[in-house]
Image (cartoon, rainbow, N blue to C red; front, side, top):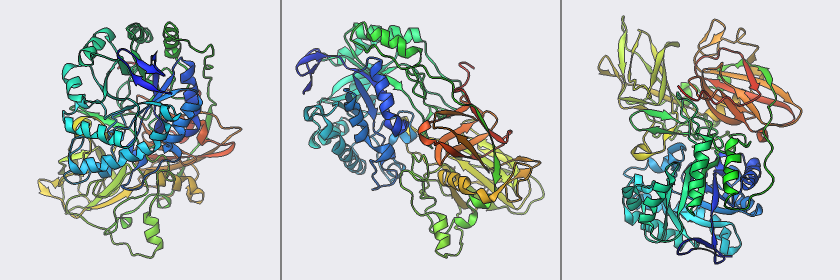
Amino acid sequence: MTFEIGDEHFLLDGEPHRVLSGALHYFRVHPEQWADRIHKAKLMGLNTIETYVAWNAHEPRKGEWDATGWNDLGRFLDLVAAEGMHAIVRPGPYICAEWHNGGLPTWLTAMPGIGLRRSEPTYLAEVETYLRRVYDIVVPRQIDLGGPVVLVQIENEYGAYGNDTAYLERLVEVTREAGITVPLTTIDQPTDQMLSDGSVAGAHLTGSFGSRADARLATLRRHQPTGPLMCAEFWDGWFDWWGAFHHTTSVEDAARELDALLAAGASVNFYMVHGGTNYGLTNGANHKGRYLPIATSYDYDAPLDEAGNPTPKFFAFKDVIAKYADVPAESPAAGGPAPELTVPLSIVAADAWLPTVADARVGSPGSAASADTARSAGSAGSAASADATRSAGIPASPATYAVPPTFDALQHLSALVSYEVELPDASSPRLLEFEEVRDHAWVSVDGIPVGTLSRTLHETAIVVPPGQRLRVLVEEQGRVNYAERIGEEKGIIGAPLLDGVPLEGWTATPIDVAEAGLAIAAAGDSIAEGFAGAPASAPLHHGGTPLGITGLRGEFVLDEPTDLYLDTSRWGKGYALVNGFLLGRYWRSGPQQTLYVPGSVLRSGTNTISVIELEVAVSPVARFVAQAALGPLEE
């Protein structure tokens, strides 16, 4: 078969063809659910599936390339082909996508002097290696070789970032040299400057928008005088960030815009047909004056909800598509209520799972056990941990620093670092100041909580009482995925001041969330029943309610695996794992108050839940509820 760009249309085997596509990110969906989501997209009337490729999922550490399991792009594309559909691949290298660091690995963005998203030699060398690895997977799956791939995108909305045409030209060269023969595209928001700056010879221009279709297509046509018009990101919903409300868009308005697109003869790619979930620590963040970390749910108010069930948009869009193309008579069944369960939780002694200062040794690179996109300690390539150092008989020798090292300096890919320092003697409170804390910090003196610092609230200073030992527990809440802040360092930034004087002698203890969760799940002999019976080693235990970082564990029994919704509304802030699978982050600030638990990580019989609570869990139970609670629809 052939797929080409004609004077007015896409041409499939020489005949005019309209692309009806939906975005479905393999890295946001459990691999055992890929086939289900692809099939349901076809039932909406789509003929194509589009996906980004997340570089940091495949190569969290330099040279450690992985294309298996969650990262098996080849299998995903084969499933698209098995459904009789085409595929569009968007390998970036930058993808935005509200994904951690915009898809770029932290080892890449931390390289000294590197020039991101431009024709800088160090960056280009790494990008070329990455793209060739991706194209090794994509090339044999192109349509002219019997595969599903019909389009490959160059970069991603580059006109909103830069205008280095030489960079785009080199990406085109590398793509063609690697054996990609299908048509290439670019995508930009339809403004004159963005379309001009983001275009490159050899790639067909497409647009990204969700409204005013007629006007946007007219702008696109000025810059792409011939060939098919395509909205390659038709924004049919929106994403959520912590502390806001759950974003939705009007079904009627979205259907009307879709109708306008198709009536104009355009092709379309729904962004998203199914959003999925930011499992593990994979969420990104935006920062256009205020840091706003993306929520765990990536439901996106899409035609298929976070659990893959059809929404009113599914049926409205299918009705519109039916005016312009044949659609299947079958539609997916509506989702029913999930089982409701209440699971008692018990505190797990801290020494069973929480690293100590002694684990932060001289020369230690920090936690090497998690990847940027770790969903469990068993995924994405574990390396040696502090336990291995202990078992080797190496004596504890904590490193100290005049200036606290960043997560990046520690090569720490997980979400937490505990910074500690001895305080000079004093008889009265003093002012502790930071250049910046990225992104959220809990401050305590001698184990007593003092307060928090929020990057979102632009907080950089706090008054601390007299005491001996200061601890600042810093959480990386998600790396910025858009514009110039991509790749910025995380942790304590700069030299802390105490009453204007540099405070030195810091230790830094990386805490791997995924490994800690597994240790909690395995620590059956370190449990005290209920909060009231918690051992003294439970950190900051107070009056029957755990304060500070606390590990909790419970078990529940299922007759058979099925999707569940974990209610987090009575907890504070932290992370939850089921059977060692890191579901993601929760936070009482909302909007979402449930975490989606895919049935694929559950089993018949006994299942384990482990929780890392960073603040206060009011309720000593885990509740699984009948349906998702993604938050209020307005503030």
